[in-house]
Length: 222
Ligand code: CA
Image 1: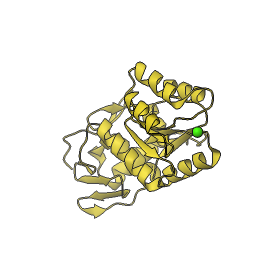
Image 2: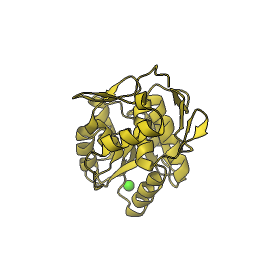
Image 3: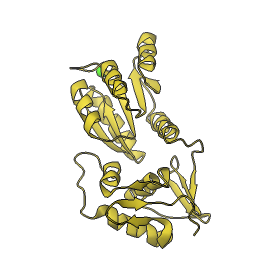
């Protein structure tokens, strides 16, 4: 899952980026409000971590503009300890959750997983389809109740397909979920990972829709 982190504090931004990468997210990090707004109009993110005190354009204004365009991407705001007012304004402007600085990186990752899960309309944190069980928090996958070893990219691809079961995702949409800016995108990466997943589970788990993309059918039985 690809997330945007907007934080002007270099140390904190660096720590958040590292922490979320550790939890398996692809992370783009931006340090001012204007660049954040640009990124949010061009890139698809599963969620946004938004500091409110930002140079060039406040986090609150970034949030208001995002919601005025009817974009429903989950947003978690970061606020200072003593700023109850900021939290209220943020939630009223369309934020879905908040954390007070300083916070724990594991808690941030857990809250993002919860927001992404809710945004996808799922209530159960465990995804299950065709004998495949995926636990986003533990980063674990079982097939017919036996653990399956997956690389970070294979896991991310499987996670994206399972969250969107029944929908066709284009190669570009999948690449956008797997890679952050600055990551080197291997050519044919999506094809290669789909091939690995079919081999590790079963061939029909992921269908190729010619000229469109890939689909994990909802009602597939292995
Ligand atoms: Ca700040």
